[in-house]
Image (cartoon, rainbow, N blue to C red; front, side, top):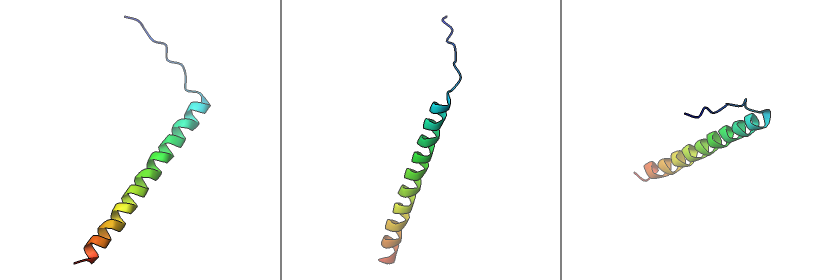
Length: 46
């Protein structure tokens, strides 16, 4: 079997992953907030 050498993660890649993490959290918070607003509008109808 071929062995792959794992190179250490560079600082640039860490920053990129951190930015991706923040983007995913931001998108998730936006989706949850939107869902809560739409759900509250739906509940107010009754």
